[in-house]
Image (cartoon, rainbow, N blue to C red; front, side, top):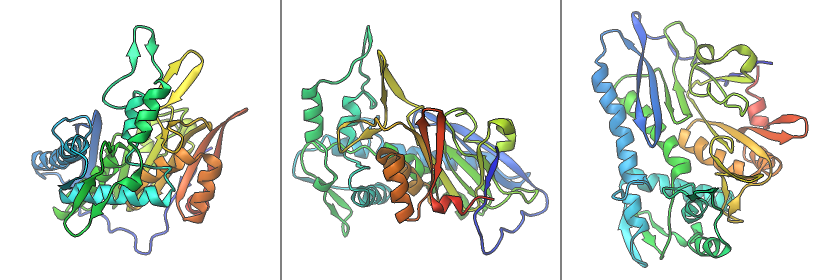
Length: 348
């Protein structure tokens, strides 16, 4: 079955100028790939645009990566207790929004859960020996839990400073990719590019229409077929494998799923999605959750928060807060799909 999601828009985008074509840029960042499809004149200087996109991504890495030891975030994580740190504007914006989502979700999303992520081996340090994955000890988890707690982080919004309360380890992996997509979009718009599809590691944002007047159609990620999420649906997968496609008219989409990254220890499967409230990987059987939102940063963060909540609690929360979300739950008969009301209203 093929379902189509089309947002209601008051003013349809104007078609691109005559003679415009779709250009494709691509590269590597954050341990993954990125691509940008943009509509511009055939003679447009792509080298300058390529550098522009890469600069935006490199800036996010330099500020917010836990993998780079000299990033602003890594320096904060290693700082002494009680010290205040001035953050670049972009870093401060992301951290402020991350803390807002942590409060709104009652800790289902917690940017200070980095120590738990590392303890379970999903951060820069892997937990492997000659026998495979090694689960953390209860002592290691207790130590990691003591480092967590979004309430411990204090912001000074006037000076863009943040307090290091002591051993706080912030990890913005669940929001930084989405923010980087938004940054690229802003940079392109400032340079007169108003029709594009951006993808960074599976997170997407589309604006405007293609030269033929069609929107940027994308397939929503599904555990059965994970390869088609980052491209035009018509370019990447047969119709039989597509459950839902969406038209990204000034919309972003992000997916959080346990089928992308996980460890197995015997018969036990450990999802990379950590519940900060329990300190352990999720066990409720949710395979993935996809969120559509105007901003990719928001879609990224909320897909993580709803993924931690699970299908039942997450769907209820999405209904209460008008979040467009698609939940895919493992059931006895296979995968079961649940859509929030906001997502259902987009269906045609």
